[in-house]
Length: 210
Image 1 (cartoon, rainbow, N blue to C red):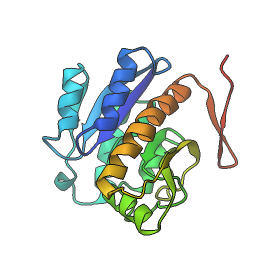
Image 2 (spheres, helix red, strand yellow):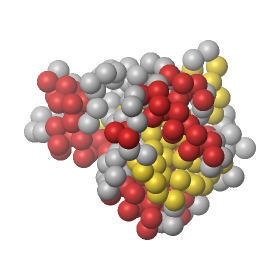
Image 3 (tube, one colour):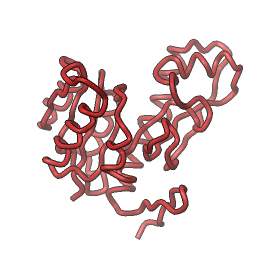
């Protein structure tokens, strides 16, 4: 069993997909052992509690700087034996030491086809606003391993989503979640838990199913 820790900052819609996949035996032998929020009172914590998963808050404002907060996260995750960290709408900045503590074991979902519309400032609705302002015909979502470069880690899975002329940022955000993010994240986590992902020269290789 691969022990999974999920970091959240909001409603937890992607977390719910992981919880549902786990309940259906579709996480490749992985188990979510803890959900940690950077803010108190978010609905993601309630989702975890309803599923019988430990739900705790490590509030960013309780720590003097990014490094101190990152060390607190590292200690909390390692104390629980977490082997895979999933960033699920986690909007709090961490230090380089955080990803170094879990090399190729921190997974993030981004609401665009990286490397397009990634990096500093590209999160939430900002991504979809940028996609529409450039007149893109397709967008999508990416699951990747996090590294020291914001949205720059090795890509695991991607899925394209059509951009429609009538789209608003909100409508596009919802469709990208439903048609891409919610499908890709559980699949990527399952591949990891099955031992089918390896990183070679900055690229993710997916081994065929045994």
